[in-house]
Amino acid sequence: MAGDNAVHVQDTGSALVDTSDLVVAGQDVQRQRVVIADPATAAGLAPVTAKVLTDATAGLVVRHLAEPALPPPDRSHSGRVLFVEDFRGGATGVYNDGCGSAHVDPEVMFNGLPSLRLDPQGNSSTSSATGGNQQLTLGGSAATYTVGGSGTLVGTTTQAGSPAVDTGGGYIVLNTPSSSASWPTTDGNSYVLTYASAVISGGSGAWTVTFSGVGLAGLPGAPGTSVTTANQGTAVMAACNPNPNGTGSPLTSGVVAKRRICDQFSGRFGHAVWLRPTSKSAATSFTSVVCVSLYNRNGTAAVLGRMMIQTAVGMNPSPGWNNDNQLLWYVTPGTPVGFKWVPFAFLTRAAFNQHSYDPAAGSWDAAGGWHYAKIVCDFATGQYVSIQFNEQVYTSMAGVPMYSITPDSGAKMMHFSVELAMAQSATRRYWNTARWVGTVEP
Image (cartoon, rainbow, N blue to C red):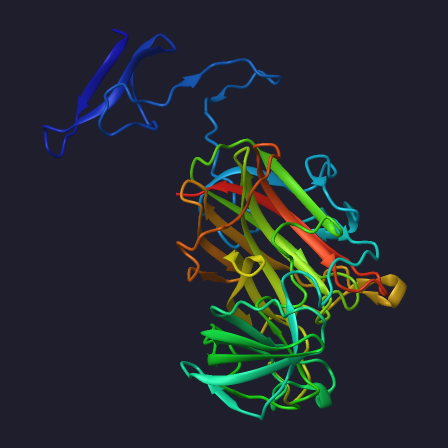
């Protein structure tokens, strides 16, 4: 009779074979089941359904289970993704708050999709006299400074007003220009010094700043553990903040491309982007000011986390001159101008000013070289969490306060932005950016 049955296995007399009883050509037979079966559930059998198809055949019913998607081309997968801006549908999700242009570039592609070109269009945004930077000429005598040292350094200026120097301590940047006669260091490398205090003396047209407790900043990737100054009376140094710099808020005299969401300081967020200095000489020292920012407003103040990339000359002067290494900074509250840029790494292997795409200048490399940047901030505490550049994650700024602008009555929204400004207007230069990812971080 038809139904579910079992047959004895002859070798043991106790094991059973799963069969079905059915009539075939008038005979009652046992059909052994060869099925896809669940080993723990009696009814867990994959059914075969006789369903008429276009050719009247029958097939096994299979439910498709979606496999996890391959990860996107990224350097980090931490955090829950809020949005991805990949510009495949244009730049409609991004707003430019600057006087330059931010437009989709179909010639410079990333992951098979167009990128966003940031072009200040010849507008000049910074100079040595702005942005909380104090330019000084090296004075005194040549001296050697080491990590953890405590020396003295003298700088002079012939400006009219008193130098804007933080007398309570800060940083001195020795960034070498192309001419050896103007190098502030004997080896031609760029360096950052720390100082504990400063005294300003003199008067209009003849100021002297004496820095005390001067030592070499021992930053990851720094080119050496000691530095000797050179060319006193002709070489220059930048005190307090680097020159040029992104000031305390995004420079609308350049390009400020941003994506917004609404969040009332609920916790940690991340902003990850890809960057490429595209045009010829786009990363020339003392020229480009590029920042990756993440900031929010509460109705009375703006709270900003910002990372700046400064081109530093030198680093590898032998056997060939290499002028496109990078010095990384983040911004935090400080004096005397309200904000302070703090160095946290040198990139002595970052080939920034390479493989440009600038057909008007005879450069045709559309593939170029892309760099990854990600900034993570905790808006519940108003502090930095981490900054990543290319393969390296830096946490030395963890717990450091973000910079705050008060009063600020702008819209209470969170901004994920990339900014580009130029300190020189004689040559038009531009960068490209691609694949922005906004995240909520654990």
